[in-house]
Image 1: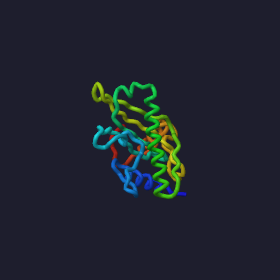
Image 2: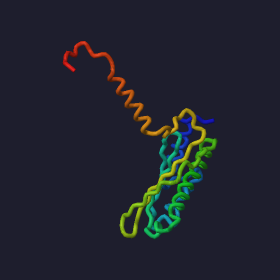
Image 3: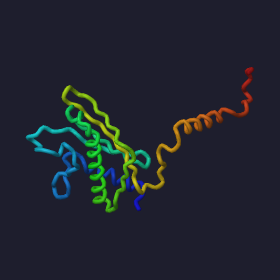
Image 4: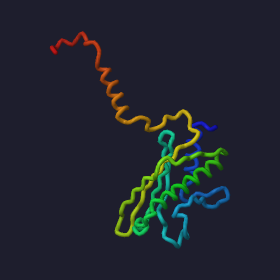
Length: 176
């Protein structure tokens, strides 16, 4: 059973080894499943896309960004394509984590993807997407989002106001 620090370090090392143009032990380029890996490197125009990860408590948030045509965005199944792209990244993370550490990485989809498409021109757009995954085996980590924000805020305000109550200092001589 890996500790939380070992899991975070393992995922961070996988990300460090997964940059665009990275090579494996055999000298072959690492394939994640992104659009930039398709076609010929010199002859074809490069597609800009990539991925990253963020940690949020016991969750791993995989982010994906890339350029696309407006015609692709108009497809009703576009969001599921983006979800599939993020799932490929998660599969790559699990495979490389297993290869690097010798133990498996458990990622459970926690919510639907959050996809934001923005227009660059009348032809080109870019997409930014995030999908949270719950990391299995993380112990000693507070779960994010427990309770409502109003409850936590009220408790903190009450604690702060309690600090102000107390006996009046001796050097205060003004009238109330």
